[in-house]
Amino acid sequence: MPASATLPKYIQISERLIRDIAAGHLADGARLPPEREMACNLGLSVGTLRKALAVLADKGLLVRVQGSGNYIRHVAGVSSVYGFLQLERRGGGGLPTAQVLTVDRLPKPRDAPVFGPDTHGWRIRRLRRLDATPVAVEEIWLDAARAANLTADDLSESLYLHYRDRLGLVIAAVEDRVGQRAVPDWAPADFPPPVGVPCAHVTRLGRDGDGARVEFSRTWFDADRARYISRMGKG
Image (cartoon, rainbow, N blue to C red; front, side):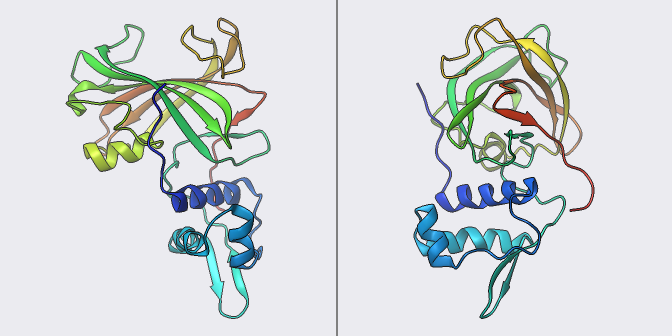
C-alpha cells in the first residue's frame, strides 16, 4: 500500500511534545531531562533534539534557563503541524502518523455538503495511527479545482502541511460534527472495529482564509483506543 512521506524527525518530536504538553503529560514549569539524556531516551542525536526544542521555544512552550535547564510553559492556542487533529490516545497525546490507502479523482459524493465549485474532488483515504497504533480511517475530499494532480507519493503525513506548502491552500477553520456511523467496507484489517459495525464518526468541513468551503472529510475512529477532544480557553 502507498505510504505518506515521513516528516523530518525533529518535527515529529516537536509535535509529540506539543501534544503531550496540551494533554497535561508535561506540566507547566516541569523541568525536562538533560538534553543528552533526553536524546538518548528518544533515540535521537543531540542536534536533532535541539532542533525540536528550538521549535517549542519559538512557540513559547519552552523556557531555557542558562545553567539550569529547559522548562515547560503552557500556552493556549499554539499552532502546530497537527493543529486541527482532534484525536489523541485515550490517555492523552500521541504522535500522529498517516498511511495513504488510495488517491482518486472522482465525482463528489451525493451525500456531501456543497464545497468548492468543481463537480469532482480528490478523494484521499488514509489509515491514521497514534504512537504506531491504528486508531482511525479517514476519507478526505478536496475540491478538484484546488489541485491539478495528486498522488500518494506527493502527500506528507500532515495533509494540511501539504496543502499549504504545495498547493498554496491554508485551511483556516474547520467545523466538526461528531456522531456514529458504520465502518466502511474499504477499511483495512489494521483498523480494529469490523466493517459494518457502528463506530464513532466525525464529519468535517474545512474552509480557506476567505471562508470558502474547500474540503469535506469523514473519520471513523476506535473509541477504545482514541478520543475526540477540543481544547478552548487559557492554557
